[in-house]
Length: 384
Image (cartoon, rainbow, N blue to C red; front, top):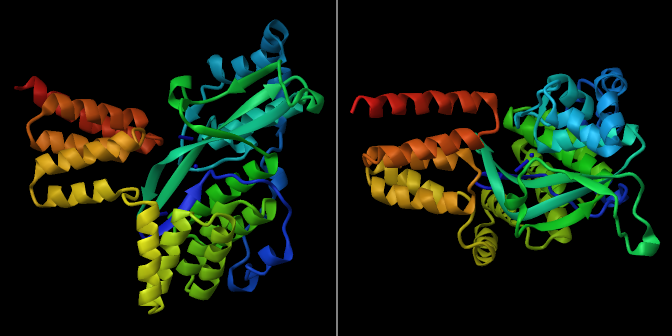
C-alpha cells in the first residue's frame, strides 16, 4: 500500500512495538454503547491458511518450488505466473484467505497472504514498515494517511548471536525499489501487522458509515497492540461520530501520550474542543499544530479547488502541482491537475496527468473512470 485529517483523521498502516492489552486500554472501551458485530472479529483469521490455499501449495505452486526453491518458487507461483492473476485493489483490506479467493488486495492484504503461505511452508517472515510524508486518500469527510509495508522471507529466523544478520532472505514488495529510497524503515511484529489490519477495517467501516462495526475493529486493533498509536486515533474518531466527545478526548489523549506530536490526533482533539466550546484551548492547540505542520495535507489541494471555483486556472494548476510534488502517488491530485491544464488549453499536459491518475488509482472503479476521461480527451485532441 502506497491502507482522517480534514474533518476527521484516521491513519492506515502505522506501527509501534507490540504489547498486550492492559487495564488503561480496556478503560477506553464502551462496548455497551455499540451494537455487537454480526460475526466475531478474530485475530487468528488474519493469517489463517484456507483449504484452497493449501491445495494451491500442493498443486500449481509445488512444481515451481521444486525448480526454484521454497522462497523463489513461492514468490514465482504467487506473483510471476499467470495462474493467480493478482490485482491491486485498495477498497477492502482482506485476510490471507480472502485475498487469495478474490485474487486481489491492497498492499497489506497481499503482504499478509504472502506471509501466510510462507509460514505454512515453515519459512520465517519479517515485516518492514516504510514511512515518509505519508501518501493520502480520502472518502467523504474522512482523510486517510497511508504508509507502506513489505515482507521478507527467510529459510530460518535471524541468529541473535550474529546481531540479527540474515544472509538467506528474500523481500517481497509491491513497489519498485526506487520508490523506497529515502523512506524511513523499521521492522514491526506480527501483532502490529494484525493491529494494522484491524485498524484498516475500522477506517473502511467508518468510510461506509458503519460506526458500530468500526468500533469493534478499532477495539481489536488496540487489543492486538496497545502501543499502536493510530488505533487510538481511529477510536477517538469513532467516538466523535457516535456523539461521545468525552470518550473521544480520552482516546486522543492516549494517542498523544504515546506520540506527543501526532498531527492527526492533535487536529481531531482541537476540533472536539471547539465543538465543546473550549475555544481558547482549541486555538492554542491549533497554534501548536501549525508550528509542527505549517502546510498540512490537502492544504494546497483545497486552495487549488478554491482557485478553480474562482476561474483562476493558472493558480489552481500551480497549487495542484505542489500537492502532486509531495504526494506523487495520489490519483485525485493528478486528476485535478489535469482539469486545470484542460481549462488552460494545455491538452498534452492534461492527458499526461490523467494517465498518471489512472496509473496511480487503486480501485477498478477509479481506473475505469479515469480511463473513460482519458479516451474522451484523446478524442478531443484527434479532432483538432
